[in-house]
Structures are given as structure tokens and as C-alpha cells.
Image: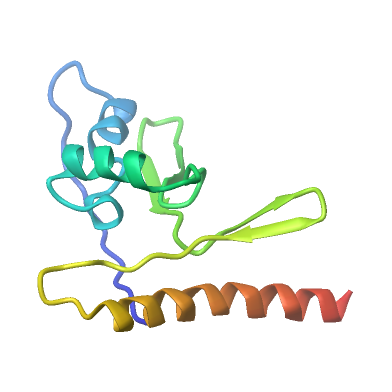
Length: 122
């Protein structure tokens, strides 16, 4: 599984700030699908669990008003003595469902392996 990193920069319209930019860009279309609003409605209808931090944004706004975020796609959530991982794959017109499922499992395996390694070292 490979991912790219993109640096996006720009100038905000008069009267807009970093929070306006964040509201306009998240959730990212790469994890919601397109068209974004309808995709989000379908996600709400079909997914049994809320995504929580998964596919959201982790970042900060500097004292100068600069916004720096990352999409939270490689995350684990700890609740009590349980760890939850989430993974997904991009479904497009020529997707092969079995391959998408395999990709999802491979993404989750990396997090599960990290948890196992951490448990062994403690």
C-alpha cells in the first residue's frame, strides 16, 4: 500500500480564516468519496459505527494563523483495555471487490502488528 503526501497552500479570501479552510476541506474527498455530500450521506446510512478520528484531521493552527493538518488514516483508538483500528479502500468503477478487501486487511494488519510489537516490548 502506497500513499502520497501533498503540500497545498493558498491565500484565503478576505474575512476568511484557517477554520473556514478546515471546514471547507474536511472530510477529505479521498476518504469520503465523490460527490462528497452524497457520499457522506451514504456513509451515514451504511456504516454501523461512527468513524471517530479515523479519516478526520489531526493538526494545528499556528499563532500566525497557518493551518497544518494530516488525514488520520493510520490510527488506533484506545478505550480502556481495548484497541480499535479502522481501515478502508477506495472503491472506483473498475474496482475488484476482493482486491479492495485485501487492501483494507493489509492496511489494518500494519496497525495490528504495531500493537503486537508494543505489547511484546512492555
